[in-house]
Image (cartoon, rainbow, N blue to C red; front, side, top):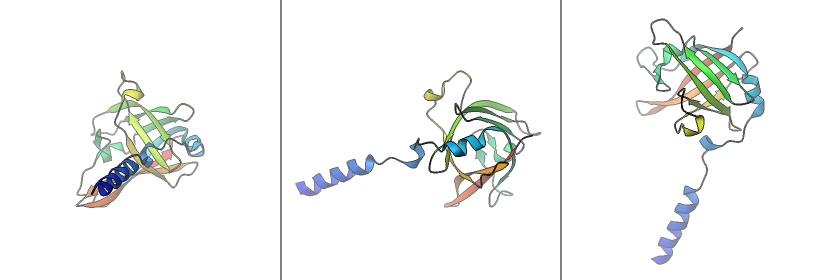
Length: 158
C-alpha cells in the first residue's frame, strides 16, 4: 500500500510540473517581425455566428472587432488596439503580446495604470495563414459541448 501511495505521489509531482504550451515563452521572432505594424480585423467568423454571440476578450461582441485597428511593435512586444465600429461601444487599450514557437499568440489587454507583469489574465490564440499582408488568429470556444474555432482575419493597414 505504501508503494502505491509513493508511486502515486511521484506521478502527481511529475505531471504537475509539466509545462503547458500557453506558458511557453520561446519566441518565434520571424512570426513577430512579420506582424510588426498596423493591422485591421476585416472579419470574425465561426460556425453559428448568425445565432450565437461571442464576447471577445471580455470586451465586446466579436462582431464589434470587425474594423478594429491594431498596432504591433515587435521589438518590445507592445502595441495597442481600438474598437471603433458604429453601433458598438468604443474601446481602446494598450496591449502586450508575443508569438511563441508553438504558433501561439499570447495577448494581454492592459489597463492604463497597470503594468503588464501585474496583469494575470491573458489570451492564447493560434496563428494561422500568415503572409506579409494578412494573418489569422484563431480562438477556441465551447459551443454545445464542442470546441469551435473563432477566426479573426487581420489585414495589413495602408
